[in-house]
Amino acid sequence: MRKKKVSSIGLLFFVLLIGFSASLSVSAGINQNTDKVSIRLAAYGSYKMSLFLQDAVAMFNDQYPKIQVKIEVAPIPLEAQSLANTGFIPGYEHRLLAEFAANDSPDVFFIPPSRAGLYRVNGALIELSTCMNKPDDIYGVMVGNGFAGISSQTKHLHEASLLLGFLEKYTDDYSMQSRQKTLDKAAYDFADIGGLDGTLEDFIATWNFVVMSKHCEDLIFFPHLFLEYDSGYHTSFKKDDDSHYLFVNVSSSDSGTTIDFVRLAFIPAFIEDPYLANLFREAVDTLIRVVDLEARENGSDSVLQGLGANLIDFNFHFFNQMGYYYHNGIQYRTLGPALSASNRLEYQIVCKKSPFEDQNYQRRKYPPNL
Image (cartoon, rainbow, N blue to C red; front, side):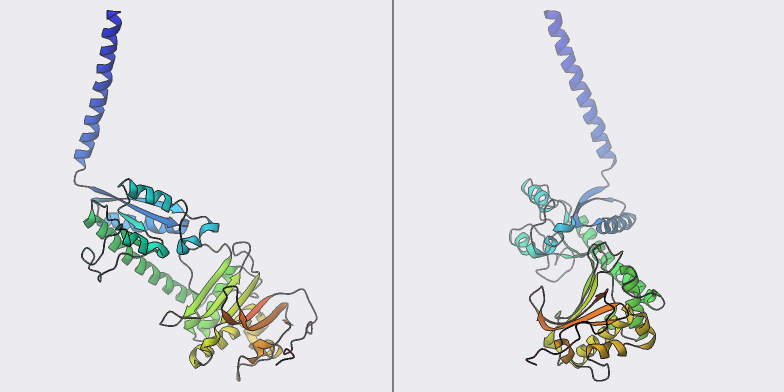
């Protein structure tokens, strides 16, 4: 029995010795890297956001080799992407809140825009006026298409400030370069097919080619840098005061391989603004030229005449007409002003491929009360 006891004590000592040796080894590793600081960056988004942050942090590490950044990007499934701007983000905020509760939050993290006030009021964010020379009461900046701030729990405020400032500038530069590439491409790139016969990418390229050829740069389609085109391309145009006046939907049910329909919508409140009303006129003309090869070469007059309109004396009365107009395999219809799915009044023109050969199918006419 005594021999067994001695053996047990010896085994325990051996285990402790191994543990102590391992501890010394880890400590030695840490001591060798005391000149480096490690910080964490937490974000959410698609694979495009992951690639964007990886490239940005790689450049940051080149500039600041003594700061190591660990990136944690929570993927947002398609069905939950709308929550990114409207509320709780599953899989991201669960972890974030748990880490705050454990006093182990990431140094820099993406804040869901609609919940930024809650994080600020509850003391989770650093005010950026001192550490980043921002105006008072600024708690976050744009990074990619997200809103990022610094955790109040960070132990490395200086390094976190350097990272956040770098990511903000990288975002601005990235966006400007992307816009310039779009403008350069629009000067020569188009698809020599009808706009509803090609891919979503073909449609966007041809739209931009047409508006650039008309010197109408205010209608350029710029790509969404961090979103996927699972349901098509959706964009809007707005005034300097951020009020939206024109909406575009290019719908696709197969991630842009084919196009289901295209919709332009104009807000009636801006009819009296001659510049904005003329932009909508140009958008309608562009739409017809993009989807119809004949119109691209000869102009949109034939289609507009069938819709009850013309470019010279363009007004909004023809939107009230009922029925469809068919031309070169495309079915056109107008609405307006009518309530949209977003419950706002809009003048709309919609086009899609049509199987009907009769150009007089459901001939367009005004309602009896007009």
